[in-house]
Amino acid sequence: MIDISLEQYNRIIEAIYKAPMTGNWQALIEVLSEAMGGIHTQFFGYDILAQRQVSLQCERYDPAMIEVYAAHYYDKNAWLPGIARSQIGKANYSESYCSTEELIKTEFFNDWIRPQEEIGGGGGIVLFNDGGRFVVLGGNIRFRDRDRKERQWIDLLDMLAPHLRRAFQSWRALAEAQRVGQGYQEALDRSGYAVFLLSSDGRVLHGNRSAEELSARGDLFHFDAFRSLRTFDPRANEMIVGALAALRAGLAGRVPDVFPICDKEHRQPHVAMVLPFPSGSETTVELSGLLGNAMAAAMLVVKDPSRGSLAGAHLLASLFGLTPAETALATALADGLSLKAYAEQRSLSIHTVRNQLQSVFSKTATSRQSELVRLLDRLGGR
Image 1: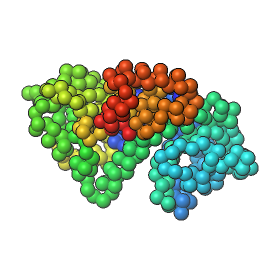
Image 2: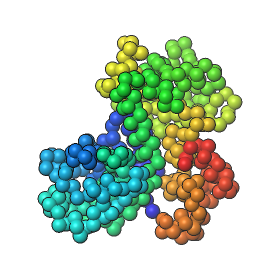
Image 3: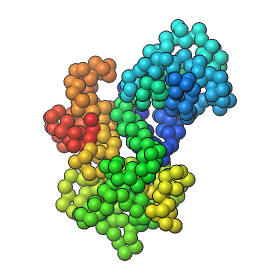
């Protein structure tokens, strides 16, 4: 059982989906470290053919040891061959990369891991591997904490895997669009999202093609006399105003999570997220011609429910108040796992799992597994 609160889970999901828009993966590994009680976390890439570190972001490591790693140990990391052979999108224990018996014989362990409280446990998840390069998100756990934390860490990575892969693919798509000169505007148009660039007071400074089409429909958004964006859903208006207020106050961590926007007819809601605008980045330069002298403070990203959700199973949790355990169960059922198989996988009694399922039914106003799976499909939870 993963021992994290719903608030912590929401913060992790928020950090995952903000990372590709802001380029800030450091925020994600920080919140992961905190949720797991202070384990060492890292996000890095490695060029297998050139045998060189491509990037490295980390949390809770001694900065001096990171400098030593970058200078001397990046190519002596005993886990690298095992990571390179790992399945993309599947969490693995560090033991599967290199056995502890072999690890403790290495220079890497004795000169770099041992001095850092023997952080030889843990594991990671490969997000990309083209045969020549890979990118992995991982965590190191002290040997003495293995029994208490390692299984939880791997289970958490497995639960987050679909979100991590979607976010990383979005990040690569935006980077590729910039690299080949398509520009950020075209990248936004190709994203499938309606994206509004907002000033700090809610004025629309720019919208991509999907945003313009959504506005033209007239059943979801309208504008006041100051060109500030408004919806026909009072609760959604409160969420947008609250998010902008939090950003003005420099409190990005308090920006509301994924929320629904209902149209005039109260049909299936669109889903939305407010993200800080990535000021000071190449994106800002690319958009300067679109915005003139105006300063964008936030992006309102809106997804048509018929095309899936912003955060998959996380949306189910946000809209219906599911706990992480209930969300994991709903996702597993949507993936075709039986209650018995799920119980065995999580080392839970079938009685506990059935109680969790009844709670999910109650919160989602469903009464059968088939109804729950259809709901999750509509929200893009697979």
